[in-house]
Image (cartoon, rainbow, N blue to C red; front, side, top):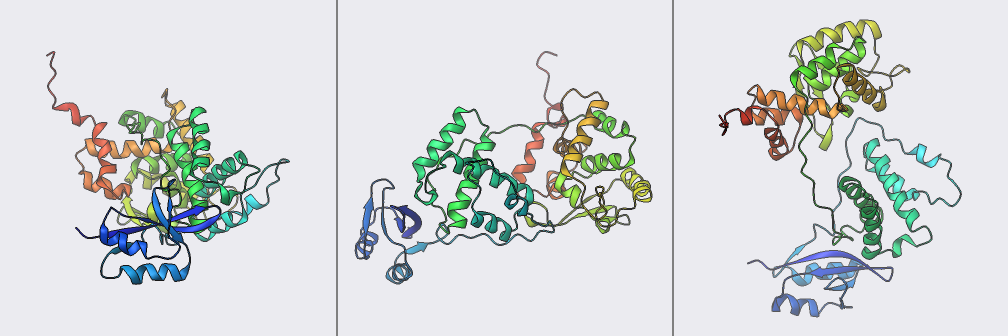
Length: 374
């Protein structure tokens, strides 16, 4: 078995250190014992040394050819996102705060801007991080440790916050310490809530069609048709440009969507007919769906309202969301015999396991199961 040692970022008494994590081995221990400034941490259960360039260089020189040095956590840095969406963090800077409120640090906003995170992610991160730093309003942020973070997360649990809310809080906190302060994996021991495995909410084909057919506004009808018949995410719908609609190949190009990937999805003939009517009526300039100001995207909240109201008009008791239409698209394709692999491509899923969830809600999964009471 190959010997290896993993480098970790540590902050002890407001000073940066390199944590050394490895399995018990006499050769590794002998090499570690010779490192300058070596100390043991009972809190982290590992040896650590000062974090500086000469010491880091010495580690690689000392272990070269004998022990593999795993720096994946220590040097981790994600590439810039190549997205067509313009990142706007200025409105966070221009806000007016209530007295005593601790706003998000400027370095945090700058890093989100430079990393080109989606605006929805920026809003979620800033909101979550500001909730955290206002819980520790009078504390030095650099001095906070894992136990402080755990205390805050325990508060969220006691408030009965959802698992997704807590995970989002953890991501926002880790972003500050690991990305903004340049200390990857500092809070590697923070426990996350167990992932919830919920089945997607799916409409029947009849209900999906009723939602579209009961919508008289041609713009709203096109939006609903694309969400359902093309399986688009709301953000993908709002980022569509006129040139992304290919009527000759009956396809739609989705540019730089989730995970920064382009993909193609299908264009329905009936949706194309509606789009032609819509174009003549509205004459969009840049984006397929624009707000009151020409050339500017339609708002996400408007799409939510359109879908919700269309569901009510169709007599559907459950609140309908854009993502429910996307789930219905995938499920109905599966029920019609489309392979999981093709559905995965159309949805833009990285993993087939994500797409397999639809086998749990597709009716043909149960069609061949014998009725024990018959």
